Image (tube, rainbow, N blue to C red; front, side, top):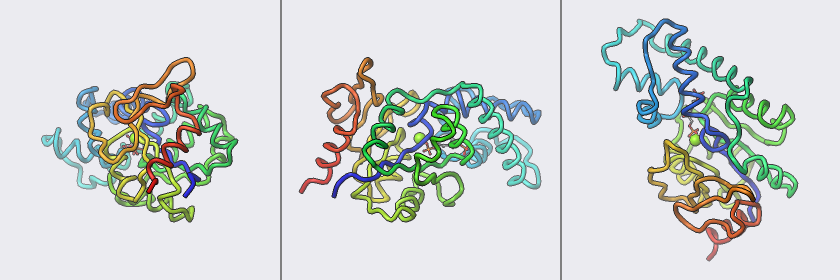
Length: 257
Ligand code: XBP
Ligand code: MG
């Protein structure tokens, strides 16, 4: 079956959002709420075990701040903090603080020109996705994606396969027609367990040591003609950057036989 659909994770994949984006936005929201919580870079690396911002705050309280006196309405408290964090994060995007990763815009344009179907499959809040697209590619970019599957649309977040399964069901496509772009072990597990075998990982500072068993190719970045990508596992494209031809040949190899 030919490659027809590209499914993109957002955080860490389209842009390096975690360390200098989400982490900073969480800390600003905590300060705004009068909390002295400080999610340092190494601590945030541990908190990334759990996907989803609300889930991450709860995980922090359970495992790293057991002494914090919990409000009676803990769900409401977390939801309020998370709402403030989302506003902080959107503001950072508006200020242009978080650019797309190398090769992302080029590849999206090439895929659109070739008529591939594009979609997003992420655990992040929908507003974070649209704010990133608006500010990095322009307001028309939302329309490039047939579907934005995001946030609490499925209750079980990555590494559960639900968000990928939901996206493919909505689009009416089988896993064998799809390719997933991810940056983390949780994301690879999610796509793989949804049946996708063509998974391309571009690592970042938090994920580079993770186990990407199930991925077809692991690169440091998608690369550009002037700044080549390097493979951590599998074979880097001969051109030095990921383009549609290299995606199609990877897809053919993963689905051969
Ligand atoms: C991304 C996440 C998100 C962001 C924060 O995981 O875990 O939680 O860190 O987003 P993935 P929200 O890239 O695997 O989808 O605060 O909006 O939940
Ligand atoms: Mg990710």
